[in-house]
Amino acid sequence: MYASESVNEQDSERTAFRKTEKKYKLYYDTNSKKKKRPRQVDLSEVIDFKSISEAFDDKGELPSGVSKLECRFDSPVFCLDDCPGFYFIPAALSIEEQCRWIKESLVSFPQPPNRTNHNAIYGPVHDLFYAAKDGWVLLEKEKLPGEDKSTGADINVSSHRWASSEELNSSVSGNTIKPVSASVLLRKLRWSTLGLQFDWSKRSYNVSLPHNKIPDALCQLAKNMAAPAMPVGEEFRPEAAIVNYFGSGDMLGGHLDDMEKDWSKPIVSMSLGCKAIFLLGGKSRNDQPLAMFLRSGDIVLMSGEARERFHGVPRIFTDTENADIGALEKQFSDEDDGCYLEYISNSRININIRQVF
Ligand code: OGA
Ligand code: MN
Image 1 (spheres, rainbow, N blue to C red):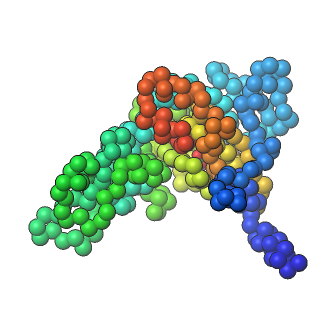
Image 2: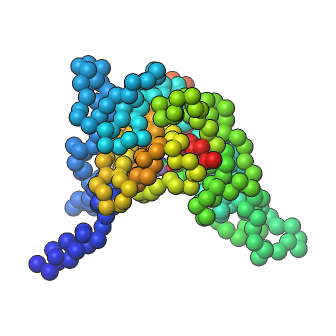
Image 3: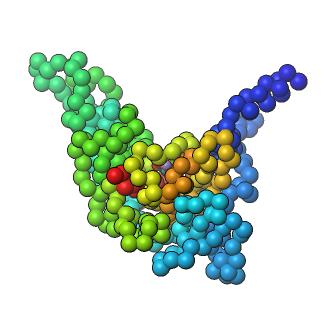
């Protein structure tokens, strides 16, 4: 009796958003042979815009609460009646576009001066994806005589360099920390930032950090995709993008993106790779969130009131049955891109494009 009461008490302390995150998050059950198996989760309440879109094409029917936006746009754009400013564009990207943006996300987006989660520890890291492909390891650079190890590292200067495993086996002296393999660092890549650099430690944009413009092709894509959420005659200005990388078991906790000046401008969010669950909450974490699937090629726009809603990604699916990446896998196999295939078969990438000012 006492035990169950205390569980209830804990439950009531958690917000509706947190409870729903826990419901969908990946947990493992261990069977008697100590084998880990993903805990079964009931997905019947997860909104599936792919089936909504297919049913609409077939019978012209939409579930209650869902509308299709009338706009001059190739793909269908769905809205939720109770959530103004939220738009869902299923399969907005062709398979070729998906492959292109996956490759860019792995090869060029993490290149300095763009920053990644690895900067804080290693300084700028160049060519991570190719280093992983070639089996390289990251070593601390040898200090010059007289150089003081204790002086604070300049996070804009590389303190590390790549070495082949042969070099590592021959003679490398002066290393105080263990070399880290590039493939481990690739697996641990969680974010990179394009355009204006977001400083996670201060949770704000730092315009003084060196940066390159967001590539033109990505800008153009974001402008086209943002159109349904923009006032007529106004064009979206992509100024910053955050690329999130998810492996099995990774999640993005409930949050608001509130560091941009003008919330009437949409955030354009592209999904690539394994299918995920997206939670769209309310203005308070106590509001019950809606769960929906995000598949490779889907685009979500959040503008106006929808920008005040908590949201997050509690789960990605890497199992064959649920990941829904058959078409992507085929495309990468046809292109003979084994290394991309290997990465994406158990990962998800999200490119989140913003107008900052
Ligand atoms: C974000 C975000 C959602 C996603 O990066 O702010 O909300 O689909 N991402 O990964
Ligand atoms: Mn967000």
